[in-house]
Length: 260
Image 1: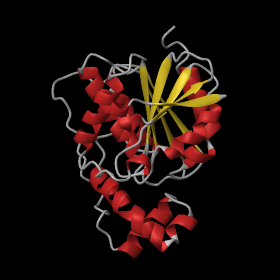
Image 2 (image 1 turned 45 degrees about the vertical axis):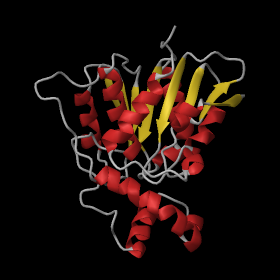
Image 3 (image 1 turned 180 degrees about the horizontal axis):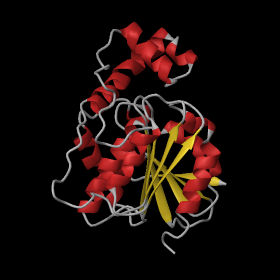
Image 4 (image 1 turned 120 degrees about the vertical axis):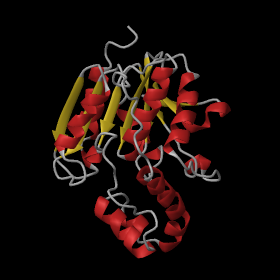
């Protein structure tokens, strides 16, 4: 059984750390949400964690327990804050991110590498390599009806949310801020330097996701001097939900040797 352990107030982005009862964490898996998502998406993963791998869903400002805080306005600022929070823990870190979260996990890993605290593994899902601009054109300022239709097409939220006007009044500013964050992100490579990461990178994408074809997902391998692997699974942009058990099992297997 996994139990939730509160994080220190100074690390409010990392509000809960899910540990198997009685286990001493050997490695912590920090999970970054997609645009419009929150740490709650990863809470369901806790039931799959039955080992000494610690699950740490990352909560960004403007949602959940941090609803009263202003959303972060740049990817660089978000990655700086995430890296600082993660660096406080003595437990070796691995990072997982889906869609926007994949880019934030990558930029956080870059910063930890520069600090001399390289992550043990980077797991990316449902987002092309950082050099590819996504979305291809701005969407954060679309009229409300078109913006909601876009979210519906992505499968980004259930219909009971997208059809609830009062709930949307509360959530749309945060979701628009996330899309503003990712659509203004531009990868800044370190010219003349080796790949920014030294850790293994594992990637997944859905075979029916038009925004993330396998050939663009494969280019994540250029961002590390370590091993790279890509698996294409059935599904659209949120294939991650239906393949949760498979992906969590793969993550555990790939982290077996960390901290031993």
